[in-house]
Length: 139
Image (spheres, rainbow, N blue to C red):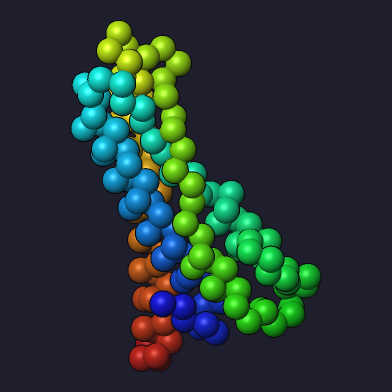
C-alpha cells in the first residue's frame, strides 16, 4: 500500500524490496530442499535491475523526474509496486551424475546474503516509521 507524500518513494521501495527478498528466500530454500532431486535445476529471482529502473522512472513507460526539486510524477509508486522480478534457472557449471545442478555451498551463501539484505531493508523501514512517530509526537 503506497504512502505518497510522507517519505517520497522510500517506503514503497523498501516494502517492495522486502517482498522480493522473501520470494528470493523461498526459491533458495526450494533449491536447498531439492539438492538431491535428480535433474533439478536451481532457480533465482532477478529483480534488482527492474527495481532500479522503477526507482528511476524507467519501468513500464513512466516518465522520469528530470530534476530532484520537481514534484514526483503521479503513479511513480505504482511503477515500484508493479516490479515482480524474473525467475531464472541458475544451474551449476558441473551438474552431478544424477543431473542435479544445485551447489549447496553456493546456495547457502546466497541465502545468507539475501537474509542480510532483507534484514537491512526491514531495519531501514523501521527507522523511517520511527522518524514519523517522533515527528507526530513532537519528541
